[in-house]
Image (cartoon, rainbow, N blue to C red):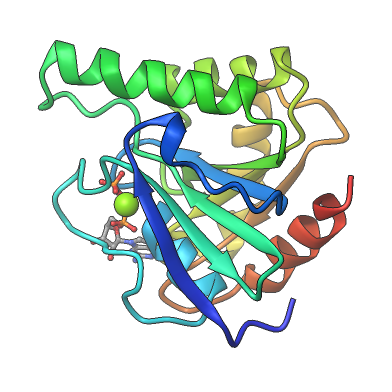
Length: 195
Ligand code: GTP
Ligand code: MG
């Protein structure tokens, strides 16, 4: 996908607001603060179309980014953020689950994990959930600019082992700051748009 034309179509809080164009969608999921909005900005070559923040829990809606009149990238609210109320968490959870399990145009999910650390119990639950629903998953390890190159293989093995990835599931080591890994993410998205 050559990205020239991209815009935020809608920040949705309810399914009735989701786009009806019928374009394929790729969702980005991961813990709060893992770098979903930063990955989105990198993919679409914008500095700050998706709002990023040092404070976790910034993204609280399903944000549909329209790319070239053919694809939506969907930035999903982060999970595992302790400071939102129980009620809010339950509401986010229900919205995200409904989206992931019932959205017919959803072609795949990019699950982000923090490449600097062992994946958390929440990360493992999310991967199992996606696998259970047989959604195609690409795992992206973010913030890899903070990890020594000599540790890259180790990071990937740890992620594979902890999440219990099926051998066919790919892992991309990514940095929003430096930009590496972006082409591999796009390749995966393009391969799954038609599916
Ligand atoms: P929520 O919307 O709160 O769920 O967070 P998010 O997953 O969208 O994270 P966001 O993109 O806002 O990034 C959170 C913080 O991590 C920001 O301070 C980013 O600058 C930083 N960050 C994101 N990606 C990278 C990366 O690849 N490298 C480094 N060094 N920092 C990153
Ligand atoms: Mg965000």
